[in-house]
Length: 193
Image (tube, rainbow, N blue to C red):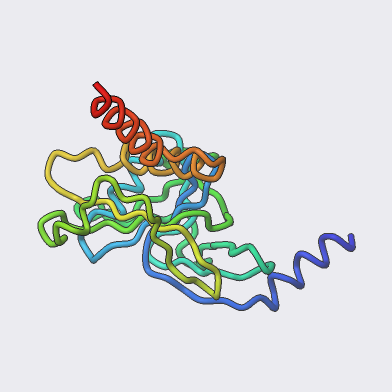
């Protein structure tokens, strides 16, 4: 009882903010998908739900700082279970995919920023970037990945892989760093020969 009451009070008095985007659970991680209007956030969420991931909120996400190191995202009650997709209208995800396709709350772990590829400067498309990007939400720094959107790209797969890569980074495995170290060793070995 005391734990439940403590959790309720922490949520009731938590610092909060709202954000525009789609909040979805991908492979157990809370992912906020952001981008300009009509870039395809809701269509991406629909694809991810059809692949077994879970919708938390579409369009507006309410975030609460429930502890010093944790931000929790929730859907406003009016929008719960609904996803608006251009051309299809407002979809009831729970009715379409079942109870397991939606989740009421989720801690925020990662931000995915969708950007049109043709609007990104070449330096923003650095494929060997080691320095990670972050965004501040409610005073906490949250890792952010920018995914360029272009015709023919499978954005759902890219989001799933971005989440898997985030998992590896949390365990200290950095593929880019490993590649650059291997490349440096090869170059050094080639100079000796």
